[in-house]
Length: 70
Image (tube, rainbow, N blue to C red; front, side):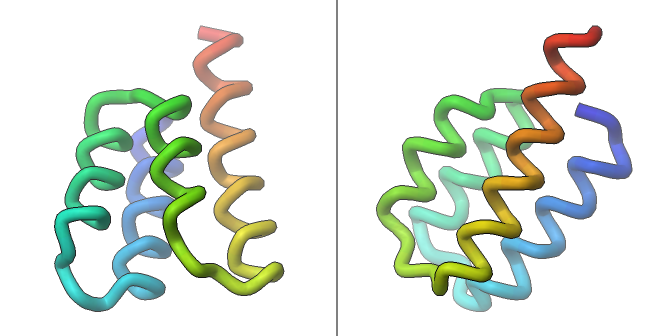
């Protein structure tokens, strides 16, 4: 994951998940540890709108493509 993509994903998560809950911290750790599978697993526990879920899944797909091309 590029630094720019990582920053974008973390900023989006922090805007959507304003309170620093353990779930958000685990999700941030998954991003920091370059673990998209864990991020996807954790996202299933969040109550996002369809638009939010679509957006964050798109960011994770970009992350997975970047990892595959590295």
